[in-house]
Amino acid sequence: MGKITKEQYEYAQERIEELLPVVDGYDPKRKEAVELSVLSDIVIEYEKEYYPIAKPTVAELITEGLIEKDMTQKELAKSLGVSPSRISDFVSGRSQPSLRQASLICQFLSIHPAAMLGL
Image (tube, rainbow, N blue to C red; front, side, top):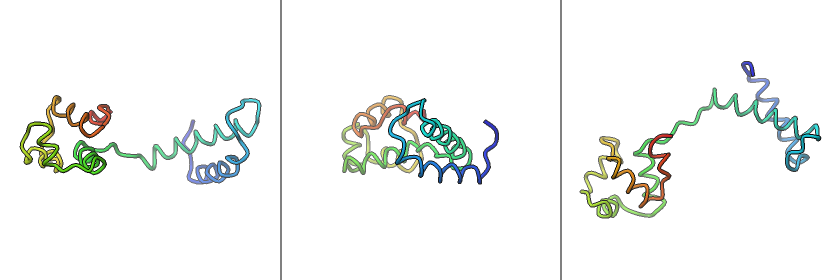
């Protein structure tokens, strides 16, 4: 696909809004379903280029995990068997956990390991 213009992107978004109530599932025999699929690809490609979503840092993952689990840094430190200042270093981005520590953090905070590895 060539370079997508802002006008094409905006048209695709508008047309998708019109098609969504009409199309129920993907049926390659329906012209609207095929059009919706193509327009969706246009929007996705444009947004990847102009509105990329940055991957969260290890510090952000830990911070969000602590919030979601309603856990303090001190509680996580105790679970990992490290000092609270170590967790503070991870959360502030001053240092990175070892692979073993990262694995345990993933377990305690229900973080997918691929996210922790930046994949």
